[in-house]
Structures are given as structure tokens and as C-alpha cells.
Length: 143
Image (tube, rainbow, N blue to C red; front, side, top):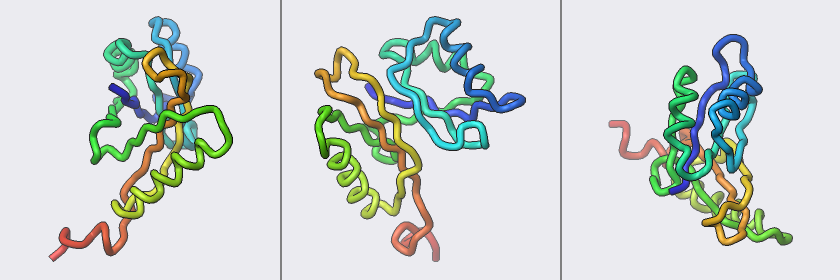
């Protein structure tokens, strides 16, 4: 199961290094990290090694993390496993953009991880998208 742990790395003051220190001290290994504006109020996105998800959530509880799952179509999280070749990332992004257009979403951030044992040597790419207010996304929700 592929997932992301998303959090705002701010207890006081904002500090990504402290988040990573806590995970390292607890022996949690990461397969990927990404996000945007991570020390300016944005979210840090982490992918713990398989089997270490619960430990990561326990360690990061003070940050009120939330989990988004690749296999939940409403989460906005898409996973591509890409080859290390020209155009592979572009194909993944093009597919995500087409899906987003249909769902009224835009890309918030990308996370590019390291291949794991169960990824067949391919590079995991997480694309996290959020709903935007468009006439299409609002149709049927207002009366």
C-alpha cells in the first residue's frame, strides 16, 4: 500500500530538520520526501518504508499528521512507477493532468522517491492534487 504522511512542520518555529531528526531517532526510514513551502506554512509529504507507517505516525503525532492513500480516488494522490528514461516523468504528469482536468483538480506538489523492493526497480513518483473551485467542480453542490 502506498501512502503519504502529510504535515505542517511547525511546532514553534517551523523546522523540517526537527521532523527528520525525530524520525531518524526513532529508526524510521523514508522512501521519499517532498512538499512545498514547507517552512512557510506549507505541507511536508513523507513516505515511510513499508511497515514503518504506524511508527512514523506515532513519532509525528504532535504535528497532527494526516494520511493520504494512493488507492483512495478522493485523496488526490496518484502514484506512477517510472523508468529512469527521457520522457517517463512527463508521461506520468500528462496522465495526472488529464485526470485532474476531469476532476477539477490541480497539482499541489510532487514527491519523487527511491525505488523500493516492491517497485520493480522503478522510481516512485507521487503527484498530489487538490480540488479547485470551477463551475465543473461546483456543479450539483449548490442549489
